[in-house]
Length: 116
Length: 115
Image (cartoon, rainbow over all chains, first blue to last red; front, side, top):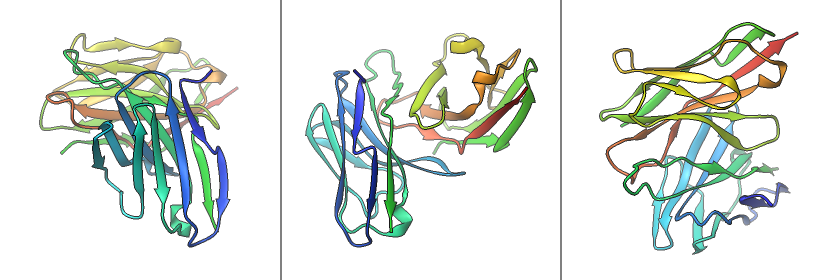
């Protein structure tokens, strides 16, 4: 089974609809992240969470919200979807750096979202 | 602030030829650097990482990268390209002085391998 799973894998919705993307992990990591990927722009950080009570905005948080329901679950919501939120969305996890100071990230398979 | 620039959004090589994907970073403190690969319809997979130990880092699938502080570069190379290397490659940087920063990604380089 995959360590980082995302649901749904594909979603088509209409402008103005509320939508939630879900991420679950079995790696036991404290940290979780949401990115969006647009062609030619790489990955842009939307939100990240260092533990259940520590949630931070990323580069492009406007129009998005998140919920860290448990250590293993981190969901991304679009309260009122708009067409320019059409993108590929990735969830990632990492362990706390500790003494190693490394925050290597592990990615889920992605959710392709289309907003009409 | 930290940033990453990947020179060349598309690189095409012949099978068996040298692969060179360029990455330059900007960071006010010693960085940690990563290369990720994304195969079609998949998530990102870590190729290799630099964490202030050896400057020449070996990764999976025959790839390696060299950290050059004087040039602020972390270019990815492979001596001989294989058809299965066709994918998109992302360079990423993280601050090395604190664990509270997330990764900053470059815009990616799509590698094509011609037979």
